Length: 292
Image (tube, rainbow, N blue to C red):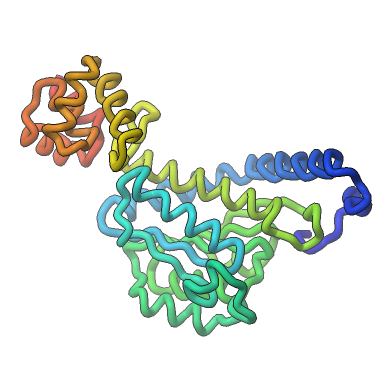
Protein backbone atom coordinates (compact mmCIF):
# COMPACT_ATOMS: atom_id res chain seq x y z
CA UNK A 1 0.00 0.00 0.00
CA UNK A 2 2.86 2.43 0.62
CA UNK A 3 3.56 2.36 -3.15
CA UNK A 4 -0.02 3.01 -4.23
CA UNK A 5 -1.25 6.31 -5.66
CA UNK A 6 -4.10 7.68 -3.56
CA UNK A 7 -6.84 9.08 -5.83
CA UNK A 8 -7.56 11.74 -3.20
CA UNK A 9 -4.34 13.51 -4.22
CA UNK A 10 -4.53 13.05 -7.99
CA UNK A 11 -4.93 16.79 -8.57
CA UNK A 12 -2.42 17.82 -5.89
CA UNK A 13 -0.21 19.72 -8.31
CA UNK A 14 -3.15 21.87 -9.45
CA UNK A 15 -4.28 22.95 -5.95
CA UNK A 16 -3.40 26.25 -4.34
CA UNK A 17 -0.85 25.98 -1.52
CA UNK A 18 -3.34 26.36 1.33
CA UNK A 19 -5.51 23.54 -0.02
CA UNK A 20 -2.50 21.32 -0.64
CA UNK A 21 -0.97 21.99 2.77
CA UNK A 22 -4.28 21.24 4.47
CA UNK A 23 -4.43 17.89 2.68
CA UNK A 24 -0.84 17.07 3.63
CA UNK A 25 -1.53 18.07 7.24
CA UNK A 26 -4.59 15.81 7.32
CA UNK A 27 -2.48 12.92 6.01
CA UNK A 28 0.05 13.46 8.81
CA UNK A 29 -2.70 13.35 11.44
CA UNK A 30 -3.98 10.13 9.86
CA UNK A 31 -0.46 8.67 10.01
CA UNK A 32 -0.22 9.20 13.76
CA UNK A 33 -3.68 7.68 14.25
CA UNK A 34 -2.51 4.42 12.65
CA UNK A 35 -0.32 3.78 15.71
CA UNK A 36 -3.40 3.04 17.85
CA UNK A 37 -3.82 -0.57 16.72
CA UNK A 38 -0.07 -1.15 17.16
CA UNK A 39 0.01 -0.16 20.86
CA UNK A 40 -0.30 -3.73 22.23
CA UNK A 41 2.60 -4.88 20.04
CA UNK A 42 4.71 -1.91 21.11
CA UNK A 43 4.00 -2.60 24.78
CA UNK A 44 4.84 -6.28 24.35
CA UNK A 45 8.25 -5.25 23.01
CA UNK A 46 9.06 -2.47 25.48
CA UNK A 47 8.89 -4.68 28.57
CA UNK A 48 11.52 -7.29 27.57
CA UNK A 49 13.59 -4.56 25.92
CA UNK A 50 13.84 -2.65 29.20
CA UNK A 51 14.84 -5.84 31.00
CA UNK A 52 17.75 -6.46 28.62
CA UNK A 53 18.87 -2.86 28.69
CA UNK A 54 18.88 -2.65 32.48
CA UNK A 55 22.43 -4.01 32.57
CA UNK A 56 24.94 -3.53 29.76
CA UNK A 57 22.82 -4.08 26.66
CA UNK A 58 22.83 -1.77 23.68
CA UNK A 59 19.93 -0.22 21.82
CA UNK A 60 20.59 -0.90 18.15
CA UNK A 61 18.74 0.58 15.18
CA UNK A 62 18.84 -0.93 11.69
CA UNK A 63 17.57 0.43 8.41
CA UNK A 64 18.08 2.25 5.13
CA UNK A 65 17.24 5.70 3.81
CA UNK A 66 14.58 7.69 5.65
CA UNK A 67 14.04 4.96 8.24
CA UNK A 68 17.61 4.90 9.55
CA UNK A 69 17.90 8.70 9.45
CA UNK A 70 14.87 8.92 11.72
CA UNK A 71 16.34 6.20 13.94
CA UNK A 72 19.67 7.99 14.32
CA UNK A 73 17.83 11.13 15.41
CA UNK A 74 15.97 9.13 18.05
CA UNK A 75 19.07 7.43 19.41
CA UNK A 76 21.22 10.55 19.39
CA UNK A 77 18.77 12.41 21.61
CA UNK A 78 18.79 9.75 24.35
CA UNK A 79 22.17 10.91 25.70
CA UNK A 80 21.36 14.51 26.62
CA UNK A 81 17.76 13.74 27.56
CA UNK A 82 18.21 10.63 29.69
CA UNK A 83 22.00 10.38 30.14
CA UNK A 84 21.93 7.17 28.09
CA UNK A 85 25.57 6.37 27.23
CA UNK A 86 26.38 7.01 23.57
CA UNK A 87 28.41 3.79 23.56
CA UNK A 88 25.18 1.91 24.25
CA UNK A 89 23.50 3.13 21.06
CA UNK A 90 24.55 1.52 17.79
CA UNK A 91 23.37 1.93 14.21
CA UNK A 92 23.32 -0.60 11.36
CA UNK A 93 23.16 1.74 8.37
CA UNK A 94 22.66 0.58 4.79
CA UNK A 95 25.55 2.20 2.92
CA UNK A 96 27.36 3.23 6.11
CA UNK A 97 27.42 6.63 7.87
CA UNK A 98 27.74 8.52 4.57
CA UNK A 99 24.20 7.38 3.70
CA UNK A 100 22.81 9.59 6.46
CA UNK A 101 23.31 12.67 4.30
CA UNK A 102 23.34 11.33 0.72
CA UNK A 103 21.56 8.55 -1.12
CA UNK A 104 23.80 5.56 -1.90
CA UNK A 105 22.62 3.45 -4.80
CA UNK A 106 21.86 -0.18 -4.05
CA UNK A 107 22.77 0.05 -0.35
CA UNK A 108 19.35 -1.10 0.84
CA UNK A 109 19.64 -4.27 -1.26
CA UNK A 110 22.96 -5.36 0.29
CA UNK A 111 21.98 -8.13 2.69
CA UNK A 112 25.57 -9.33 2.99
CA UNK A 113 26.67 -5.92 4.29
CA UNK A 114 23.93 -6.10 6.93
CA UNK A 115 25.17 -9.47 8.15
CA UNK A 116 28.75 -8.18 8.19
CA UNK A 117 27.74 -5.11 10.24
CA UNK A 118 25.93 -7.29 12.79
CA UNK A 119 29.01 -9.48 13.15
CA UNK A 120 31.42 -6.55 13.35
CA UNK A 121 29.30 -4.94 16.09
CA UNK A 122 29.38 -8.15 18.14
CA UNK A 123 25.63 -8.06 18.59
CA UNK A 124 24.44 -10.69 21.06
CA UNK A 125 21.90 -11.68 23.71
CA UNK A 126 22.41 -8.50 25.74
CA UNK A 127 21.30 -6.26 22.85
CA UNK A 128 17.96 -4.93 21.60
CA UNK A 129 17.69 -4.38 17.84
CA UNK A 130 14.95 -2.35 16.13
CA UNK A 131 14.68 -2.67 12.35
CA UNK A 132 12.61 -0.17 10.38
CA UNK A 133 11.42 -0.30 6.78
CA UNK A 134 8.25 1.32 5.49
CA UNK A 135 7.88 -1.31 2.77
CA UNK A 136 8.82 -4.16 5.10
CA UNK A 137 10.79 -5.65 2.21
CA UNK A 138 14.20 -3.94 2.46
CA UNK A 139 16.82 -6.73 2.11
CA UNK A 140 19.43 -4.94 4.26
CA UNK A 141 17.05 -4.48 7.19
CA UNK A 142 15.57 -7.97 6.99
CA UNK A 143 19.06 -9.52 6.91
CA UNK A 144 20.17 -7.37 9.86
CA UNK A 145 17.22 -8.54 11.98
CA UNK A 146 17.68 -12.16 10.98
CA UNK A 147 21.38 -12.07 11.88
CA UNK A 148 20.77 -10.23 15.14
CA UNK A 149 18.02 -12.65 16.16
CA UNK A 150 20.24 -15.62 15.32
CA UNK A 151 22.90 -14.08 17.59
CA UNK A 152 20.39 -14.01 20.46
CA UNK A 153 19.41 -10.33 20.40
CA UNK A 154 15.85 -9.21 21.12
CA UNK A 155 14.45 -7.96 17.81
CA UNK A 156 11.60 -5.67 16.78
CA UNK A 157 10.58 -4.99 13.19
CA UNK A 158 8.49 -1.92 12.33
CA UNK A 159 6.86 -1.90 8.90
CA UNK A 160 3.95 -0.16 7.20
CA UNK A 161 2.84 -3.08 5.01
CA UNK A 162 1.40 -6.37 6.33
CA UNK A 163 2.76 -9.87 5.77
CA UNK A 164 6.24 -8.70 4.82
CA UNK A 165 9.70 -10.14 5.36
CA UNK A 166 10.68 -7.69 8.08
CA UNK A 167 7.67 -8.59 10.21
CA UNK A 168 8.41 -12.30 9.77
CA UNK A 169 12.07 -11.81 10.68
CA UNK A 170 11.37 -10.03 13.98
CA UNK A 171 10.58 -11.63 17.30
CA UNK A 172 8.33 -8.62 17.93
CA UNK A 173 6.65 -7.50 14.69
CA UNK A 174 4.94 -4.10 14.75
CA UNK A 175 2.66 -3.24 11.83
CA UNK A 176 1.74 0.41 11.30
CA UNK A 177 -0.58 0.55 8.29
CA UNK A 178 -0.15 4.10 7.05
CA UNK A 179 -1.41 3.29 3.54
CA UNK A 180 -0.86 5.28 0.37
CA UNK A 181 1.14 8.51 0.52
CA UNK A 182 0.19 12.02 -0.61
CA UNK A 183 3.02 11.65 -3.15
CA UNK A 184 2.89 8.00 -4.20
CA UNK A 185 5.81 6.01 -2.79
CA UNK A 186 7.26 8.95 -0.82
CA UNK A 187 7.45 7.12 2.48
CA UNK A 188 9.39 9.94 4.13
CA UNK A 189 5.92 11.42 4.66
CA UNK A 190 3.15 9.38 6.38
CA UNK A 191 5.29 6.29 6.94
CA UNK A 192 8.23 8.40 8.12
CA UNK A 193 6.04 10.32 10.56
CA UNK A 194 4.57 7.12 11.98
CA UNK A 195 8.02 5.56 12.36
CA UNK A 196 9.30 8.65 14.17
CA UNK A 197 6.36 8.62 16.58
CA UNK A 198 6.77 4.88 17.17
CA UNK A 199 10.44 5.34 18.06
CA UNK A 200 9.62 8.30 20.32
CA UNK A 201 7.17 6.08 22.18
CA UNK A 202 9.47 3.05 22.40
CA UNK A 203 12.61 4.83 23.54
CA UNK A 204 10.78 7.11 25.98
CA UNK A 205 8.92 4.26 27.66
CA UNK A 206 12.11 2.19 27.89
CA UNK A 207 13.81 5.12 29.62
CA UNK A 208 10.83 5.47 31.97
CA UNK A 209 11.11 1.78 32.85
CA UNK A 210 14.84 2.20 33.51
CA UNK A 211 14.24 5.00 36.01
CA UNK A 212 15.37 7.96 33.93
CA UNK A 213 12.01 9.72 34.42
CA UNK A 214 10.38 10.70 37.74
CA UNK A 215 6.95 12.32 37.96
CA UNK A 216 7.12 13.16 34.26
CA UNK A 217 10.50 14.89 34.66
CA UNK A 218 13.77 14.00 32.90
CA UNK A 219 15.72 13.55 36.13
CA UNK A 220 18.81 12.09 34.43
CA UNK A 221 19.24 14.85 31.84
CA UNK A 222 22.66 16.39 31.41
CA UNK A 223 22.61 19.99 32.70
CA UNK A 224 25.09 21.21 30.10
CA UNK A 225 24.02 24.83 29.66
CA UNK A 226 22.37 27.68 31.53
CA UNK A 227 18.86 26.79 30.36
CA UNK A 228 19.23 23.17 31.47
CA UNK A 229 20.75 24.19 34.81
CA UNK A 230 17.68 26.31 35.41
CA UNK A 231 15.51 23.33 34.54
CA UNK A 232 17.52 21.14 36.92
CA UNK A 233 16.99 23.65 39.74
CA UNK A 234 13.27 23.70 39.06
CA UNK A 235 13.10 19.91 39.16
CA UNK A 236 15.02 19.57 42.43
CA UNK A 237 12.96 22.35 44.05
CA UNK A 238 9.71 20.77 42.92
CA UNK A 239 10.54 17.16 43.85
CA UNK A 240 12.24 17.92 47.18
CA UNK A 241 9.88 20.81 47.96
CA UNK A 242 12.71 23.20 48.76
CA UNK A 243 13.61 26.73 47.68
CA UNK A 244 15.46 27.47 44.44
CA UNK A 245 18.55 28.45 46.44
CA UNK A 246 18.51 25.15 48.36
CA UNK A 247 18.01 23.25 45.11
CA UNK A 248 20.96 24.99 43.45
CA UNK A 249 23.17 24.32 46.47
CA UNK A 250 22.25 20.63 46.43
CA UNK A 251 22.95 20.42 42.71
CA UNK A 252 26.34 22.03 43.24
CA UNK A 253 27.23 19.35 45.79
CA UNK A 254 25.93 16.56 43.54
CA UNK A 255 27.76 17.64 40.39
CA UNK A 256 24.56 19.00 38.81
CA UNK A 257 22.94 15.55 38.77
CA UNK A 258 19.28 15.86 39.60
CA UNK A 259 18.56 12.53 41.30
CA UNK A 260 21.32 12.65 43.94
CA UNK A 261 20.68 16.38 44.36
CA UNK A 262 17.07 15.66 45.35
CA UNK A 263 18.25 13.35 48.12
CA UNK A 264 20.89 15.87 49.21
CA UNK A 265 18.19 18.55 49.39
CA UNK A 266 16.23 16.16 51.62
CA UNK A 267 19.15 15.90 54.04
CA UNK A 268 21.40 13.14 52.72
CA UNK A 269 25.10 13.49 52.10
CA UNK A 270 26.29 12.95 48.53
CA UNK A 271 27.64 9.54 49.53
CA UNK A 272 24.38 8.55 51.16
CA UNK A 273 22.46 9.72 48.10
CA UNK A 274 24.66 7.69 45.76
CA UNK A 275 24.29 4.60 47.95
CA UNK A 276 20.50 4.96 48.15
CA UNK A 277 20.22 5.26 44.37
CA UNK A 278 22.49 2.25 43.89
CA UNK A 279 20.31 0.17 46.20
CA UNK A 280 17.15 1.25 44.37
CA UNK A 281 18.53 0.48 40.93
CA UNK A 282 18.55 4.17 40.06
CA UNK A 283 14.87 4.67 40.83
CA UNK A 284 14.48 8.01 42.57
CA UNK A 285 10.99 7.24 43.88
CA UNK A 286 12.25 4.07 45.59
CA UNK A 287 15.31 5.86 47.01
CA UNK A 288 13.12 8.62 48.45
CA UNK A 289 10.73 6.07 49.95
CA UNK A 290 13.62 4.21 51.58
CA UNK A 291 14.86 7.43 53.17
CA UNK A 292 11.38 8.19 54.48
